[in-house]
Amino acid sequence: MKYSESIKSISYLKTHASEVVRDVVKNQKTLIITHNGEAKVILQDVKLYEKTQESIALLKMLALSGKEIKLGKYKPLQSSLKNVQKKINEFKREQNEVQS
Image 1 (cartoon, rainbow, N blue to C red):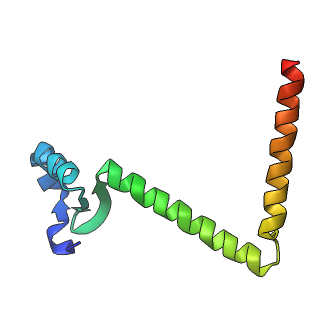
Image 2 (image 1 turned 90 degrees about the horizontal axis):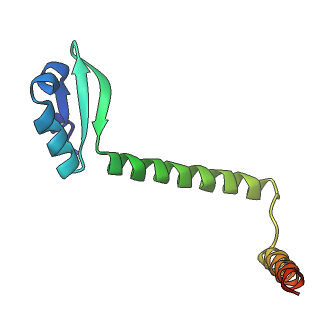
């Protein structure tokens, strides 16, 4: 992203709102809106915002996972798979009992 093309003043936004919104949505852009020469807010396509938030959530999960592994707070894969299979079997038994 070229910041030089992504900075607009609030007065520009006020006079060209429809055009700016259309451009941001069409091109999935992010604009920096300035007020009195200082960057104040970001105007971003909602789909791009959602992708960004999903990426941040995944990065947080990875960071947390790495921390848990370093602390030794994890189960071996085989143990986890056995637990899942056990829960599936219990669920199936319960469903068979309900149907009987």
